[in-house]
Image (cartoon, rainbow, N blue to C red):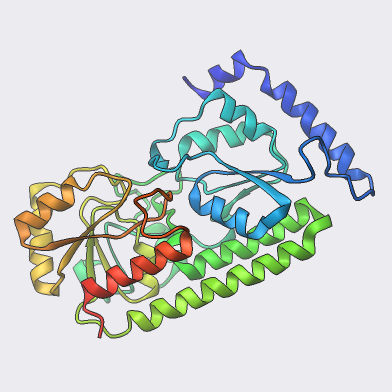
Length: 341
């Protein structure tokens, strides 16, 4: 059922209009209880999926009540929203999402009329990554070394047949690069300060702390992946393009950006050849999607399997309790697979 039909059934727009009016009237008062609009005095925040939830929870701290639209264990790309979720978006004070990952969310947000709506993709630069992405791999696989973001936008603009959203093939997985994620964190901090000026100092302090932590994570990756016997890793979900580029690695995606796509026999043969040539040892699969492809491929090519988590959600199966911990587990898995010295 499309968002439009749901809209016809439930006059949430009317409700949303009233809520928004109510909030602007409230925030116009100078009293300290301005934001106290019947929801405690917490800012009502909606985050589209885990990487956005983590940012708003860490930066918002005690001043926000965060609801994530994607429940743990749900593949974010497949998300369909309930009428209640669509209504709750409209009642938010602040919405953080990443355009191009979840079409259903993009549509609902467009219609929600929430004033403080932030698209994380606008807070950093998106790039295009094909299924064999690498850290400027000097014409490897016949792909031109791209002179950074601008040209990268044209590079696969016809899409690789598996791009999300209208971004002409731009890779949305920016949160897997701690440096880009820190840029997004700074933008989120600034936008929360604007949305809730009363608590600006706390948002700034929390942002600085998180950015410092992401800086440490980046340093751990830099040092941990500096000397390795191979630079190539193979993955069923091409989510690690930014990470590969940041740390001078080459990601060989079996099936491209869609984790559920089946690889062709030709691609399996190609991966086999690449693995031998590049001394790759491991096929990585992820926690939320099926590992069938990875297991089949590993059997056919004599490679090991391992888990590399694209951090689209945290579940009991995750190798860590939050973004930082799972990224540390990812680093350990990469070090092992790449033969870190």
